[in-house]
Structure formats: structure tokens, C-alpha cells
Image 1 (cartoon, rainbow, N blue to C red):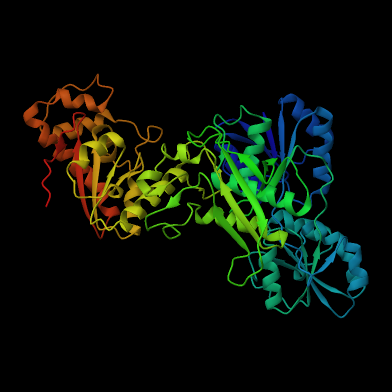
Image 2 (cartoon, helix red, strand yellow):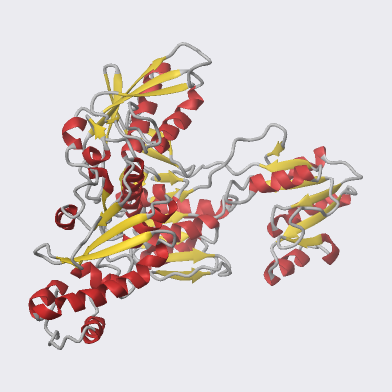
Length: 589
């Protein structure tokens, strides 16, 4: 069993990740006031001291603890570390992402420093939380006026009054979003991006206030993993408690290329060769990625997790060298080497002749190498890329000689919808760039073979496979301004689509026999379908002279849900049986 200490934005994000597993876990908060809906997690509210925490972990067979509590909850962090160490339970610390410390801000280590920095007459706006009021009260004895900004909760107001704050000293986070309360100085906690630190600093500067910030407590406890985002948390849980997630995540080729580039740069510029290097993902979080070192390059072996990816296990290499400083060059120049495909058609982020390294991986490589402060030339290569590419969409997309270095989030979830839909978008973009006047979308190779004979004049790039994502594919067509679309669909997906399921995957939609019965009735077909298990059985059961009428009814219902997604275009829907017969009989100009 897994136990999360939350009550924070990080706690909420941790819960979002864990809910994806469908496995039970516990979520602990001190006050129980966090608005959070859990389906698989069980809440436990109320502070746990050392003895209570130890007893809970033993009683409930806790095998992993995630500490996602507030960064300034020092006592809680210490207690969690003590208990997990004593009971030999792995600990994951979910930290926040912190911006670099601004030198124009006055940074302090402790509240006591304020007495030697602030002098009356001055008004201080303290945004450091209700628990800090007692520690700030001595400043009032020096003649310093203090306004305490707290959460608009009855419990917070009561605690503030217990510590001596008066009603006229209190303001609330739901009020005065501009911080316009007549203060000269603001005191903040270094609360990170999710704590609104940057926004508070900007608001204070607009008011002309002096800004002081209390540094976050340093990490002192040893944790098996320290993460600062959802991807890192999932990877940590997958490693420490493998059975929690039924399917494990993996890394994109873009993340692997970035890790190899970072490792190569470290080896070149500092002679360091750590077994794993930190990689900043597109969302700003950092994960550690295993790497290897060789003569003249570093490499990363792609682990796709449980996602069915033909590139699983391939070696992605990066060689890094210093480039002469030149205003005409980018600080980080990225080249494609062996096994990285070459773009031959328009429609990509980069022109024909460029290496097939997508925009996001390029940004990742540049962002992660910028801190080295050197003009670098990076060459990405994939020794098995040319052979591997034959089993990908690349030949159809006009990418020759190797694979693409891709990835949007940097991490691949099993059977990733994001990755598949991103590939659909890329195929649709290439289709439009080919100049075709029509795009033909199909569920897969079988339906495409049947329907391609109807459009012999169209280029290969005009045929795009949607898998199960019919709705998303039509939305993409509309976004790209594709005006003429043919949707080829076989009966198994068609009866789901006709019922309004724009995603026809079996985990989201199953054949509804009652609805199929209504379709048959509407078509004037009277047959017993009580024992069928697959929609395609209907082709053999419906009398031949009624097939066209039945197909027309199915197509009509499909169009009811699909045509609104292409409001400015012309949508043709074709129903295909297992033998390749197409309804209605196509007639194309």
C-alpha cells in the first residue's frame, strides 16, 4: 500500500498521477480542508505525530511513502523521514519547481533577521501564513505595522486571533489580488512556481514595494527519489512499487537524445561522467535519465515501458563539440547523423533537407545545454535507425533514411493517446502540404487498402489512419483547414460511432446491442441478434437486398456526430464490409 502526505498543489498532482493506476492508496492531510475528489484513494485527515504515523504504516502495510507536503512543513518532513527510515520504507519527496533566486530580492534564512533589517515607520505585508503570526509579533513592539494575509477560512481566522492578530490587521487571498493594501514591504515565502511566488513578486513590484523572501528549508532527509513533477513521480513509483501501476511509462526519443547530449557535454566540458543526468522536460520538471559513455559520444538506450513502440531498446547517441562563436549560428547547433531521417516533403516544423528532429526535442536539447554557457554543435545519431524506420510511419510521411526524434511531453504513457494523436496531426499536416484536394481517413491498413482503389489519383500522403480517434482526427482536419474529407469505417467501429462514441476504443465504448437493434428496426430489418458478439456478423445475417438500406441508416447516424466537427468542410462517410464492399457504391469525379 502507498501513503501520500498532501494538502498542497503537489499533493493534488500526486493524487492525479496515482488515480491513473486504479490501485488503492491513502492520502493524508492535516486539516481535511483541501477540496479533492479521490476515486481510488482513501483520505485520512488530522495531524500524525511520530507514534501515530509509525502505527498507521505498520497497520496498513505501507510499502511506499510520497512526501508532497508543503516545503516549509519542516517538522512533518523530519517525522516522515524518521518513520520511513525506521521501518525501511522507501520515501519519495515531491518538491516544487523553484525559479532562480532574484538578486533584487532580500533573502533571509529566518524571521529573526527581520528585526535588524526593518525599522519604523514601515508597514509590512506578511504573506507567510497564519502559523507565522506569532513569530512576527515582536516586530510590532518595535513600532512596525503588520498586515497579515491569510486564507479565508474560519480555522485560519481563529488561529490568527489566538496569536494576537486583530481584525483590522487581516486581509485575505480572495481579496486585493493586486496587493494594494498600503504596505511598504512584502514578506514572502520561497514557495516555488505552484505557490504563486513569481506572480506575487510581480504584483509587489507593481505596487513599488520592497520584497523580502524567506528561503525554503534545505532538504536534509535522504529520499530514494526527489521529484518535482508528475512524470518523475510516476517513474519513481513504477520503480519502487512496480505492481502499483499495471503498465509502466517510458521515454520519448527526444528525451533520450537530450540525455545523451547532456552527458556528452558534461564529459567534454567538465570530465564528469555520472551514470544518470538530469533532463528538464517541456513542462519544466526534471527527471534523471541513465546514460552511457563512449569514445567521442554518449548514449541513452530508449526504454518505452509498456507502450508498444518499435523503437524500444534502441541506442540514441549524441556527440558534442565546441563550435566557433558566430552571430550567424545558433548557440546550440543541432545536426542529424546516421539513422536520423531526412525530411523530404513540406509540412514539418523544418524545411525539406533538414534532419527529422522535431521542434520540441530541439528545444529540449537547447534548453538543457544552455547552462553550460558554450556554443556547442550537437550531432544526434541512431545506429539502428535506418532499419527501424521501415516499421514506422516515416516512409509514408516522406522521411527517408532513418527514424524521427520526437516527443511532446518527454515521457510516453502506456498506449499513449497523446503520442498517437500527435502522429495523426503530423500525418494530416503532411497530407495538406501534399496539395491534395481530399484527405481520406481510415482506421487502419485493411480499410485503407479497400478504399484507396476509389481514389487512385490521390498521393499516398492523402491517406491517414485514425486508429480509434475519429473525433480528434476530424477536429484536426478542421483546425488545419482541410475542406474535403472521406471517412472510411468498418462496421465494428461504425456502430459505436453511430451511437455517439467519437473514440471507439474498447475501453471507452462497446457494442450496444439495444442500439444496434434500433438501427436494424429503422432500416426495416428483422433478425435475431441476441447471440452476436461482433458487429461484423451482421453482414452475414442481414438479407442481401436490405444491406444498402442498413448501411444508409448507420452512415446517417455516424454523420449526425461527425459532420459538426467539420463545419466548414465536406464530409463523405463510407462503410466498408469485411470483403471490401463499400456503401454507398462510390461515385467520384
